[in-house]
Image: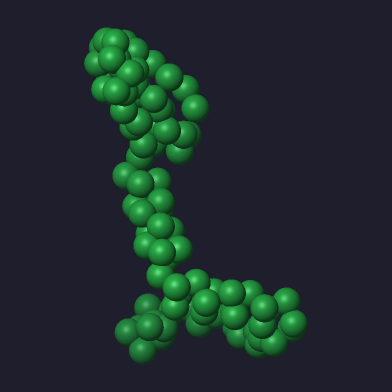
Length: 93
């Protein structure tokens, strides 16, 4: 993870925003006072991280995931062809 000073970050804000979004790599912005340092990340990465934390903090969901993984390892699954179409009835919910 790259680190950049606050003043450099401020002067090159557009460049660093683009970099963070393109590389999906968080950026540490440092300050004179270490307690004021921040991490900048893309919104997509943030959303993904918070969703992962939500799932991992839910015991019921984690149990379902573990059960699904075990079923897959044991070959207890069926393959289905994907339905492609633009009709509302073709959408799987």
